[in-house]
Length: 263
View (spheres, rainbow, N blue to C red):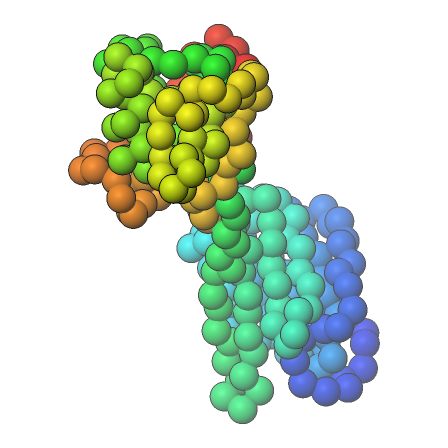
């Protein structure tokens, strides 16, 4: 239940301009409340977010279970919910749910809720079981336990490589794919065309090449879909699992716990 209300006076419409005050109670259903321009406050009751104005509880609620984070095993409603005002909308976050925006319509006395989609460039890629300078064939990547194909291909695409460049490199290197240290742009000839012979003259050391071609959802990093939609790729059947969080470690994805190759 909502055990108390924010005492701030009614000064206008919309959500609060101020911050959040967390309050601990013996009842596990209470997680906090927020002051508002029109004296609204919020609390969590089980898995729902409830609202009140002055001493009157509003009829609308938000079911937080509908916004559970991917692969999150926690019980929704057991963690503190944090709220903040943002350009007339109420931003709601917790460690168990995706961030959401709530908009209040004072005319109809209703709310609308949308999931906030945060997108990031994949500067991490997928951590390889081999060192960055390793060059293996598709068959050798596939033979890894577990298989690292098409993960290896994803990393190359994420570093800017395309099929025509990869095919040319393989033809000149006994079907080996380029290592994760190499950038194809350093293989341009005087006509700005890719030339493997020019690339082979470069010393790339052991550092990973710049990454970030793919743009992913921050809280659901679906690399399989990203790989299948990249322009210029050949037909693939991606089997890359979507990362449950920002962890890009090969062993953590598969639970091998053996440490993986450094990058």
